[in-house]
Every structure is written in structure tokens, then in C-alpha cells.
Image (spheres, rainbow, N blue to C red):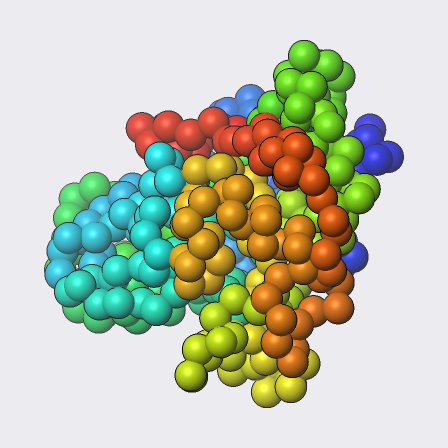
Length: 344
């Protein structure tokens, strides 16, 4: 039975309402692994799996191989993992991402933790699925590739020829590549942090300072308004003022929706592994976690479209320090050699 205290934003619950498809349930029942890599602990809701891309271990393993293959990029130098590395909280550690051929992407690389729960991708939410995001990143500035040309060069690779035949019953195609990549990305899970262990009853998993920070997070600091557990993101879009002082600011979600209320709004980033994912925000303009806590707890940066949820919470320096300690308790176990064939 799932814990009744699980808190997720309504948008997440709507996204997950359909549950797993019959195909994915069948795949789960017939694969050899006792615990499949897209399965999660009882205090998490299941990762949503689309009916047209059911999960199997063979597909996940094929997707993982593709995810780490630099041959998918236009210049042959970058893999998907190159912008989402363990040491940087599954980001690239840069203020803004650098894609194939040295292209400046203009926004920071978001973390990939628990990305399978997202119903839209990118900072502005322009991709409606992981499959579409994978294709857009592959042929866009991130990977700078021509998918048809890459597939033509790789489909005679013996390992890929065998893998695609086993998984899809046919040869390598761009659509099948993105389906395999998306299946793998749905296994990039962070479900076993110090916070998670604390919530499951290990009272020694978090320090006293982190426990005080948790109380502040859910109470006086009101961080949970936009970062509810367990995902620590509401998957919605908020203007916090970052970059709005620029002469030509990045308008964020507005470019997708053309709704004036979305001007300068960006998706709430998850706080899982946030202590490792500096610098912060869509433009990487805030260098440290302490500075990010200071900015958000003081109400963001004033501009005409500032989200009304933001206000100065009048936190003391000691309280801000406790918040930082709690956020460190959201560090995710990560090992690139195994990422991520088991929930973490």
C-alpha cells in the first residue's frame, strides 16, 4: 500500500492517471529482472509509460547504449550523457549548455533525474513527450545531427542491427532510436536519498540541521508551494525574475503559449540532487546553492510578471543555512557505469 502522505502536484496526478499500459505490464511480467528499472518504491507513483512505447529490459538496455554513444552527435564528440553527468547532478555544470560543434544553447542543461514523470520537456515545456524531446535534441543544437544520416551510418553496426531486430523486429530508424532513448530515460530515477530514507523511518538519515530545514521547507519558507515531494517540482511554470532585467529577456514559456501571464516563466526544476547541479536557474546566473536559497526566500527578482507565490519569507541566516542542509539531503546516488539500471 502506498503511503497516504505522498504529496504530488495535481498536474502530476493527472499525468499519471492512465497508469501503465497493458503492454508495459506484460513486458514487466515476462522480463527476467526481479525489480525492473522503471519500478519505484511504494511511496512513489509509477512512472507513466505510453501505450505506443511499452517498456522491456531489452529496449532499456538498447536505449542506454544509445544514450552513451558519441556517434549519435553531428560532430561525433557528444553523447546524451555528456550534458547530464553524475558529478554535476545530471547537468553539465555550465551556466548554459554547449552543444555539438561548440554551439551555445542559450539555456542551462536541466537535470535528468525522474524525467520520466514530466508531461512536457525543456525549460519552456515545448516538447510534449520524452520521445519528441529526444528527437528535437538529436537534430537541434544539442547534438547537431541529421538523424537519417546517423542511422544510415550506424544501422549496419552488428550490435545495433541485432539490438533493433530483437527490440523492434526491424532495422534501426530515427523513430526507433528516440523510442529506445525515451525508454531508457524513464529509468533515470532518484528515489533513495537521505530524505527518502528519513521519510521511510530512518530517523538518523538526516542531520538535525537538515530536519529543521525540512520543517522550514514545508512551513515558513513555503518552498513546497512549487517544489512538492516526492518529485520536488510542481511541473509548472513560474516567473521568479531571473534574466528579466536584460535588454531582450528570454520570455520562456510565453514563446510556447503566447499567454502574457507566461512571460518570463520557466519550469520549476526538481530539487533532487540540487546541491550538485550548480550553477542555478535557466541561465545559470546564480553560482551557489546558498545564493539560490537567498534569492528565492527573499521573494525573487522584481518584475511586472513576478509569480505572486513569491514573497520575502524573512528567514534568518541560521534558517537559510538549515534549508541548505536539507537540500543536501536530496543528493541522489549516481554511478555513470551503471546509470541507471536500478532505482536510486
